[in-house]
View 1 (cartoon, helix red, strand yellow):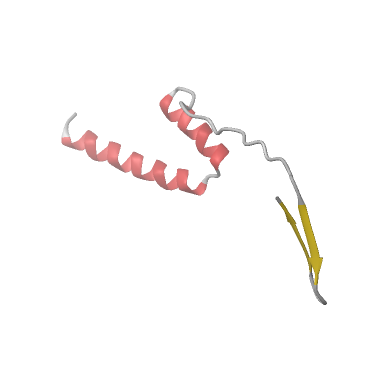
View 2 (cartoon, one colour; view 1 turned 60 degrees about the vertical axis):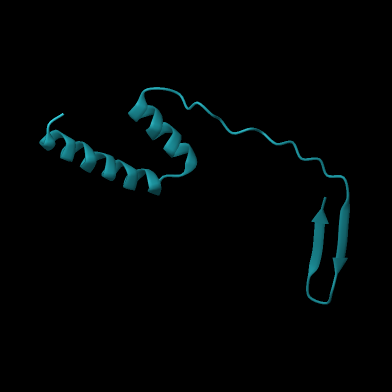
Length: 68
């Protein structure tokens, strides 16, 4: 790749990076798929959370609730 094309590529990548940083996570995945032409290699893992206990108490102004 000659020097001129390399500068253009760097400029485009820089602009795409700026745009990508403004997107939310789902939009980033779509942009990455459009740019690379493939699905993401890693997807988020679902975490199952079970509530095993609750603690509630209140003072004069607030009610606090903690789930564990």
